[in-house]
Amino acid sequence: MKQLPELIFNKSKEGKVGYSFSETELSDDLIALDVVHRREDIKDFPQLSEVEIVRHYTNLSHLNHSVDSGFYPLGSCTMKYNPKINDKIASFEEFSAHPYSPLKLVQGNLEIIKMLEEWLINITGMAGFTLAPAAGAHGEFVGMKIIRQHLSSKGNPRKVVLIPDSAHGTNPASAHFAGYEIKEIPSNTDGIIDVATLNEHLNEEVAALMMTNPNTLGIFEKNIIEISGALHENGSLLYMDGANMNAFMGIVKPGELGVDVLHLNLHKTFSTPHGGGGPGSGPIGVTSELVKHLPVPLVSRNTNSNRDGDIYHVSYFNEGIGRVKNFYGNFLVMVRALVYVMALGKENLRKVAEDAVLNANYIRKGLQDLLDLPYTSKTFHEVVFSDKGLNVKTLDIAKRLLDFGIHPFTVYFPLIVHGAMMIEPTETESKQSLDAFIRAMKTILKEAEEDPEKLKNAPFTTPVTRLDEVRAARQLRVKWERESESLSR
Ligand SMILES: *Cc1c(COP(=O)(O)O)cnc(C)c1O
Image (cartoon, rainbow, N blue to C red; front, top):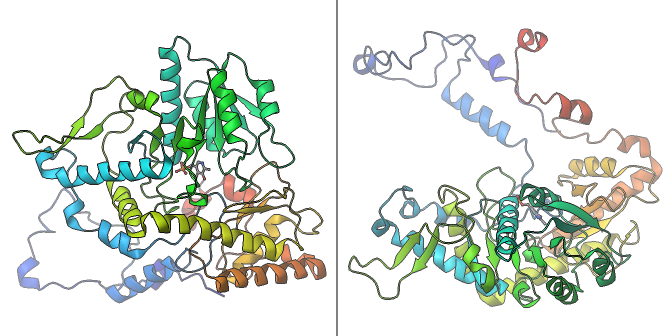
């Protein structure tokens, strides 16, 4: 069992220091003279040696589960291992630039943006891309604004956005923010949208359908061509949430299926570690008809380079929806993505998708005799089981997995599956780690039959065991406080 390290305050001993300067050089200057920033005293500030501090924080950093320390099959969020070399390249100092740098000095950066746009156009079959949005949900919002502006320019922005019950949770939020009412449409027993059901909901109020594809059941919306046809006939548009493009990139191009607007998550599919709270990127791809609505800034390539020799330009003016972010502060996400697609090439991008689907289906096959599979259609990059027939809860199984050094899968989502266990292994896992996961699940499911009470108290080996989830949510206090402080609250 991993122990919680002792509080840094308890390790403190009066007079221990983490630095040493020669008295003569520093006695009255620098720190002493910086009266603005100098504090006379910090109450109870811990006093430790350098090595104690290093060990303290290193040990703390090992308390978290990460994709570098173990299997992390979180569905819909693609916690995949990304090549470390891409991080290394993104850290080259040549790539860092001040946002107000003259264009002359950032031609290389602009070239990277343009090249990545072209790769994404190639992969998705869309006519144009913007790399402005900073995350998936931001991309959705930008996409819906584009749809709204396009429809407004035709005379009526319309009122309603249809969203299937198997869509990602950010979709309704984004459409709502863009000023639309949401109408949910039910999926059929195969877990996908029926053209007939869609037709029942279509009228002149409908601006668009927002479809997550593959949907959150891991199922490809195989009626997509009929669906986009029906929408277009109704003057409505098709938005595709392509955050999980790792399921079919290199195999199918959404642009060829009648998709009008789509977003990708570079921090899921294209090699930026996801989930660390760092910058992300949610590029939007559109059809040629919608290119003019893209947000600024737009990067363009001038083939007849001008007097200054600048080939790449940035434009802040078009008829589009305006500006959605101040700077390309997430530029290094784009560097990683470009390195990733160029290193893999077209052929291997396809292989990424094939292996992601193969791995998810290996897990499906390995567990389908033990767990209920509510939708039996073919699944792609993830598989969703339910808790039907079990005498423990999904949460108990998820918590127990931690004792096996495995991060739990996504739980209780999508909502249309009771006690959902949404498992996405990603393409980077070996057969051995998939087998270890299946074995762990089999052990846990056996325990669930023989000793269900035990599972209700799991995990046992983690530094913090079963939490009171309600209290954790209501009284979120993740920092240590002196007893006197916490009592006073
Ligand atoms: C992750 C995800 C999103 C949201 O992306 P963020 O970058 O977290 O905002 C949207 N749709 C799907 C299907 C996703 O998996």
